[in-house]
Length: 393
Image (tube, rainbow, N blue to C red):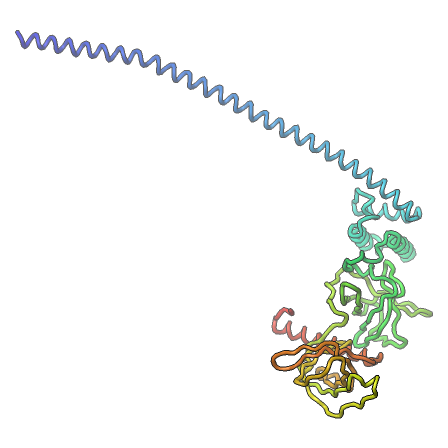
């Protein structure tokens, strides 16, 4: 009996427990359903908000681009208007002729230059535009028209002030070399001093020496010329002869180029040459006291030399401002004897003294010979470096 009661009470307890669990599950399911529904609703709202925000950003970017393009167009119009006003103002101020104004507009049109005023205020824009115009257009015209175009461009360049470099700025094109600049011209093995008599748009006009070899002086022949300009230094230009002008001037027209290497910061080119040289010492008071020349001959090492002087190393202690008579050989081709010089600088080293000597009393022929020997030695050095695939320092 007791077992039956226990059985019933146990069954009742299990039933109550089952009912309680069902009630709990029944109460939890709606709550879970509500949470899921709320989550889906929240996700839908967040997705909508994200789409709305993205659309707003895209719209703002689109509006910003439109505003930027409108303002850019307004800026270009304003700049173009100001440039045209500047062009008109400067062409009137600089007394440009109608033909020259038309020529400038043609150059601008061909090069698609919108800001017309840049051709009269910016030398880089002017030089680049003119070079393109000459190469693509002018050289295809007949000779008469070519001459008239060059004349107008030369006049325009001078009126703009582009025919000479800016102060303290290096030369960027040979069209900026001023008239009367002293230059040294080399045609083949012939070297002579000259000067720029005219710098026109076609070429640089220089006067040759009275007698010139026609084998090296003809149209399209290679030419090298150099000149010194403060504060840049020594320029060396490689070009070709564009034209030979007849009597009475007999001038040489050297072609223009914008391929200009950086100037060397010394007046004359130098050739390195560690070779033996001989010299005699002349007393520094020779010209004031008539002191006699010392008869002894000394030896030293010639470190380098140019048309203007040399650097000499020797164990002899020589007074500053003393004079020397120097003899040396430059390679196998050139021999120099008794060149007079003056000591300008003296440097004491651990082994000897190094003297900077300036040549004095150099005549035209000796100057040419020195220049040719420097060119000859430097050319040999360049060939040696190329053969050994060594870059020059």
